[in-house]
Image (cartoon, rainbow, N blue to C red; front, top):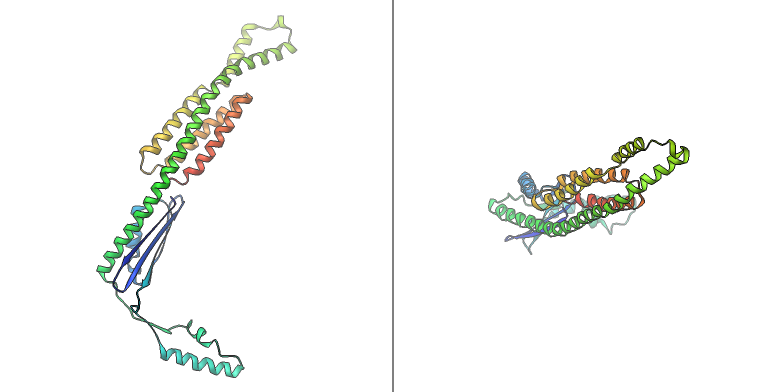
Length: 286
């Protein structure tokens, strides 16, 4: 959602500069700063921006660059003289220096005369076109960033899918190890001739079924595929990708809790690391 766009509308007396920048946000958070002349168009500006940008913390600003001798601002000489006379009298009474009075006066109200100008509709048509150009530029910036982000996300999903395949050989040896450990523990406390082999087999099957991760593996593989499809096909997949990432996390956590084997748990930790990076990046997706 990050980006920047700028456009300049050249008018006879001034150049109108439009700047728009966007940062990450869960919804559209729009701040509009315009000169007084364009205040009446603020709702229209907001509509133009929100139609183009779905999410993000957006700062939109318009300002003038007056051409030489074209500004309608003039110094109000009478007001300045009046201010100066009054302030000098106060300074003299207090015995203070009066060398910086002009700098102080120029910050006081009404020292500048500004001609009240009505917004010309033809000018606004040109300015609104420039606004559109700035938004297109920002959107292009976002698209470039989005392509790089999509490649990063796809790469991390592929890593999780690859790690899922690496679990399988450890899963097979895990079953053998669990059987051997349970049987050895039982024989340590119960004489071998008193062990009911059929009952032991039933209990082992029940125990191993509780540790079976076949369903979790299937669902995790499906979620990885769905994540990639959603990212590539939908126009604004950000929120849905966030939900899918939650489901990925749920399956990975379940696999981790059922693993009961050092190498499998190590692989799960690697999956979690990739998933955390995916969740961070998904926040940047529209």
